[in-house]
Image (cartoon, rainbow, N blue to C red; front, side):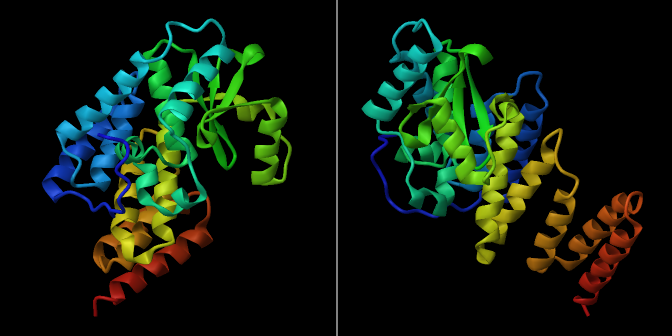
Length: 290
């Protein structure tokens, strides 16, 4: 990977046999006692991009290892760690984000973020976390509303950095502004807790689903993103309904109707009226076959 090849390329999923194997591994990794964040992100990348093979996934892991090896030995404080990551990844290697990155599927794929050195806040944060973790830093993701950042150190000494802004070290006022800008509400201390790897992965897949929702011609992306989300041990039940809608949009009416009926059975225990509406949608989907 050179990191300087910036050509436009729309990724397309791999063949069904490869996809089935990737999903098996994704489900297995997600259920490990300590799920590997970079491994899960690269499996998402391989599901999105049929060109990402095993050697490409290995190369991405090696690149993260090599970047970690370039950090100074054990900076003493959370701030020193944050500054060391900023100097290496943000300044020396030029990892950062731009508004245009929100329009690209590649901005949610770890191997492409390593190649382009551009991405969404959460994927750039994955780079920061994985490089810092390999070097022994006390690092974790912080899922601020609307803008993912990285945290270093325990609560009383917590230092935040914004990889989208090249790793800029944030003051308390900076974090407050990010939250107010995204939500209109003040920063709540609960927003600063560490996000576990599966929360990070679900949020990445949420971003992919949002990207696909704005592009009806890429219902293939919407489908694999919701399918991977459903493989996570914990996920919103409503994803089943979303999957059914995607299947119907793709003309897979029978499969979509079956999914709608299964979801209606789940909903019936808490909201009978909603279940009736969903059953009607299932009947409508079946009628489209006539």
